[in-house]
Amino acid sequence: MSKLQGSFTAMITPMNGDGSIDYDGFRKNVMFQLEQGIDGILPLGTSGETPTLDEDEEDKLIDISMQLVRDWNKKNSKQVKVVLGAGSNNTRDAVKYTERAKKAGADYALVVTPYYNKPSDEGIFRHFEAVSKVGIPIIVYNIQGRTGKNISVPLLARIAELPNIAGVKEASGSISQMMEVIEKVVSAHPDFSVLSGDDGLTLPLLAAGGDGVISVVTNLIPALMTELVHDGLSGDFAAARKIHYRLQPFFRAAFCDGNPSSIKYAMNVKGLPAGACRLPLVEARPEAQKIIQAALKECNI
Image 1: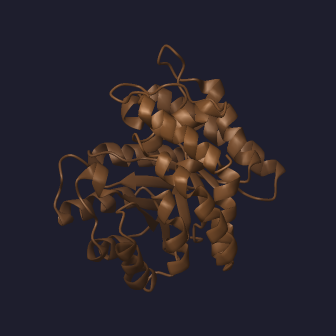
Image 2: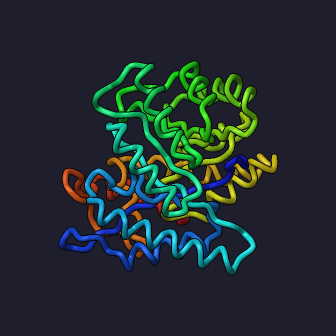
């Protein structure tokens, strides 16, 4: 399998005032991503409020995403990837969602560490062993802050030996751990992708030899983040740093009141379809709104 590199947007799910999904808004957001030069989109991730969606809603979002990207790829030389969220704390459901991603024609499935039940390392390994058998490339999603369990480098190295394990979305928050993944996992599997799960750590990860980012801020600024990533991948770190430090205030503001509440507010300010969040998530607090507005102005977004 080819190595996954670039800038990928963890898509938000826009909502109408009554809490229903704004499917037309979602279509507009996907087209915005494509027109701005994004390398790939990730529907049904954390930013998409997937735990609050039912399967019918998810299926509609998948259909929209796949159709728009297929149509785009037929007409353009740059081939945009689709990574579909397929995680669950229930291995049986994770396998089902991974099979759904394969059937839909997605390029990759993103599978998060089983959450809440906090399995042992052996349980985590067997979870990924089960989804790896589906036959679609898997991106492992390591995010201890949401799952309560960090995938250690030795455990990830073991998972990487399984078939169809294509890379990791690394959101441990530790650049040291990310570098150790490159040192010990990528050295053994050169096609294994290491993607940042934290926008603010994209630049240092690229400098360490990483492959890009699965981003939240690209919901609003896909072109800028894609430029940053491509500059870093090509070795032009002077250009990448310039964009990184320009965007630093927004990296902080985009998570100042949680995700996706903060990025949805920023998108609403800038006129992109976003709307409110579904409970238990709520809109950004007034003090957070001020921080986000100030960051948008400071970063000239």
